[in-house]
Image (cartoon, rainbow, N blue to C red; front, top):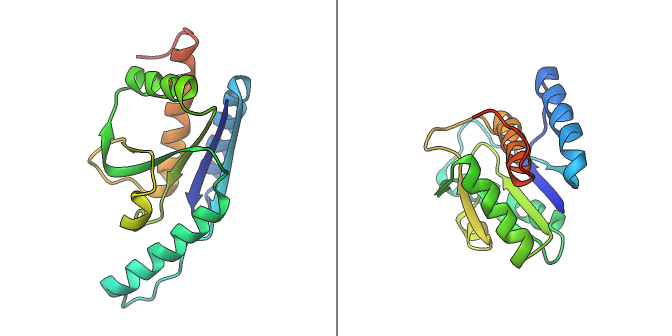
Length: 159
């Protein structure tokens, strides 16, 4: 199993970097898991809707450049399908068994992902209708991926 997590922006806070390191260490036993950061497009203080769309398009292009061929693309987007932890684990198992051994999860920047890029996804996943800082979402995702792997391999996990 190979999992890429492509994220817009980077982590600056030490506690988030430590949490990311810890979950990546725990996930090593299940396969290759990489975090790939792409630069977040800069916006001015007076950004119009058209400017935001241009920023999203720039970020989408940066993400496309990091995508590997034949990977199953899953975007973390608020309008995606919500799954509980067991269903998330089953979804991963199904993809790995029937579609691809390489999964790529994508977390957009502060404005999310462009609507055009969302059309290129194989699956849209939502963790909540709530809004989370995209830096923190990276840690939440890694924890849920770790939990999904424990479920997949019938290992104990906190319910």
